[in-house]
Length: 142
Image 1 (cartoon, rainbow, N blue to C red):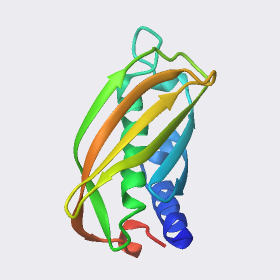
Image 2 (cartoon, rainbow, N blue to C red):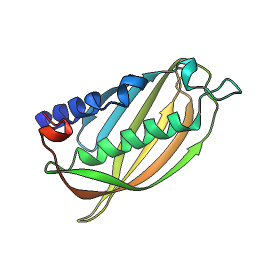
Image 3 (cartoon, helix red, strand yellow):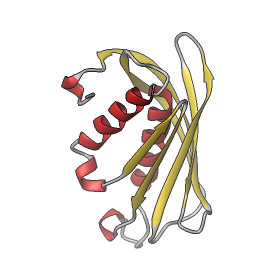
Image 4 (cartoon, helix red, strand yellow):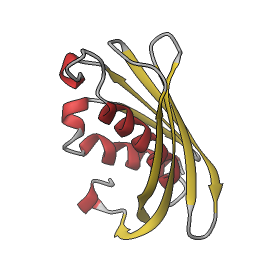
């Protein structure tokens, strides 16, 4: 399974969107962790982190926690609930996620986002299902 996790990490790193955010992903069985440095380019007009960044980090972390358990195909986010609990104005963020439920057709994962001081700044949960898209070179799975 370790090779599956490393391939997923490389797939994530190769996504064009991540050239903007420059996150780092580590995957384990049913778990994922993402770190990212906050930059002023991610701020809304009130000089704090835009909510889309909270969402991206938690959706990505829960997605890869879920996909760590599926080796044949890409999973899809079918829903996501996000709670913003604290504003962020700088530092490094860390999203941690784990699968909390798995059935034949559905995976549920929960995640928390922490600031540099270890304070929770957001939390979320997502539901995921298997897609028709094979994990292959075409999607960066190598």
